[in-house]
Image (cartoon, rainbow, N blue to C red):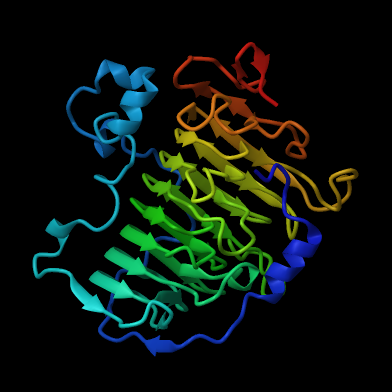
Amino acid sequence: MTPHPPTRRALRALAALLTGALVVLPLTGGRAAPAPSAGVSTSPLPSAAAVGTAAAVPAACASDGDYVWTHLHACGWPGLRSTGPKASKCPDGIRDRGTRARSVIRIGRAGAVVSCQRILGCLSIEARNVTIRDVKVTCHSGRTGEAANGTGVIKVQNGASATIRRVLTDGRRGVHACVWHQGTSLVVGRLDCRRVNDGIFGWADTGYSQTTGDNFRIKNSYFHNFTTRTANGHVDGYQTVGSAHGVIRHNTYKMTSDDNNSATSAVAIWNGRRTSRDIVVRDNLIAGGGFSIYAHDYHPSEASPEGGHKVLNTRFIDNVFSQRLFGCVGYYGVWFPRGSPTDGWNRSGNRVLETGQRIDGRNPTYGGRTCT
């Protein structure tokens, strides 16, 4: 377990490794899509039943953890049945594209749509308003350990924006993130993310602008089966070291990994490169991590964070935490207790699935003790 944020040295190393030579293939055959509206919508999402089933939710979904995790769809949570490509949306079938997992397919035309494909290779989004939908992408960076830092199965580059819907991303234990976001905006829905070090990483490329990795919306997606074998082994479902204006809503974070389920967090909001602000984490199902949640001002240092970048207006609302992997939810607990947002915690309606414990002001108890 890694109960601490990345060090300055680690962040510098990550920044230094963000570029590298890979085989690059141009993308052809994409078609234009209507441009989405600017920014990230905060309108209400469909109910849990809309993701699972229109029928009444079984009573066991309220508190029976074993039932919930074996019936995610019936309980209204994102899982294998409700994420990834949907064959019915591809009446002409799903066609194969690419021959090497280590190649990079560049998407450089604004408004391009990539759909109904089974892609072997990594996608580099280099234009605005690109849509990826009903696609499976299998990618390997060709690198190991920290040499893989900054790689993504889908990478949204500086100045680009993307909508990713009904996509399965498989990093084959050789890619940093399912989606690496350093663009202007990102919308993700019904993503199946697996075999990477981080689920979605919001990267603050401050050398390019002060808004990279901002304006993101992640919803109705399933994050699971992570790896510690690539990048820095610091496993998170969502991680940023400086992003703003985001919504993380109604996702399933099952923080399993190939190292005895070792992981750092489901959601980690840090400020090592820039102020993180205005992020809502709401109505997610979460199990695992060292601590499941970090919202931690540690700049310029953990010992003396005053005066540097900040973590502001981060809200955690109506999340359901599960003991599926550990009695304390995360190996140590839910909330990292030795750091906090600059303006304090903002938590309401958060509970433990199996016990019903309300945990807005504290970590849960397990085995007669407070988790810490």
